[in-house]
Figure 1 (cartoon, rainbow, N blue to C red):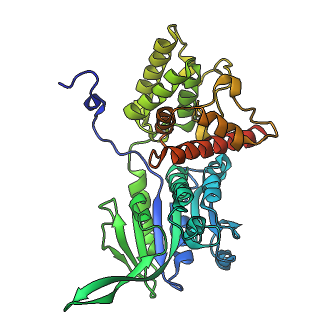
Figure 2: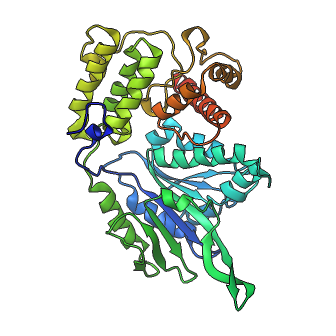
Figure 3: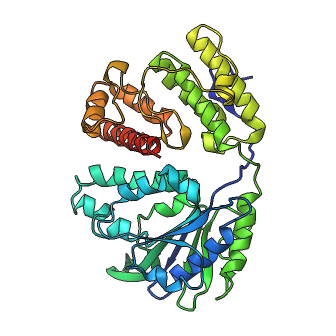
Length: 402
């Protein structure tokens, strides 16, 4: 039996939750990315499960998506340069997106990699430029993974090459086509597919045996794939209602000590995972754990209503902006320096000053508590936390006016 402080005590039987689709579709020019993504989106869209919601096409291809507006029913968002991945991340995490859409197509995601203002543009061809470019890429990847909708990203393709040695000489050898995007992005999606010039689909990466790698769908059969994919996504255990998980996370504000509050959030993530994936069968256990944690931290009793959402929690001193999707915001700013979300001031500078006053260990703990990347130098981590706090403040300010 593992000792009480062992991480092994957190292990439990693996149960797959219902999931949002995370798909990459790549093809050369003329391969049919836009049409195929709309076919798949039309099938993933579920008017019964998500009444009143629609599909959204974020179009960087000079409104090419409108070509198919007489065939498919979707909303269209034209995106002109600059193609800043951080702005796209903000859009995907906008609370109003979840309210109006259950499928999002990004066509073309390639522009946010190598287009004007994209990740490569931020790096500016300099090794040191990646201190800003890599966090920007991390932001968009995390936003795609956290988005409360199916996400289909379309990428252009290019010819891939490698240098090989043959008979003592080096030569360039063609490897086929590859997506024009960060080479590691394919690891983040649950399905990646390629289209050839005859519009045939082939699975190039998959996390499901329902459509294993190498599976092909002939031209005109993209909907067949989408049905299989949709059924696999929906086959997992049902997750808790968003209102219930929001009440759970909001209740952490009842922990008076900032350090204890941050620690409790981190332990919650270790025990129950990300709140948006909390299973219905785990909801009561999570409520009990949160109530007991609050009581232990404050040295007094806490009513069950604090974690059931049956009544409003009492007012607390401001401890940072509430996070998107109802999660409690980062508690990095001390009460005396807590920003007024509605004030017409420079949020970035105020949060930057607050984060600068923290130790590197505390910044690291804050990132872990919000399930953000902890990679990079102390300066990069501090800037990542600042960006996160600013984004949550802006979301909160927008929500307060609607």
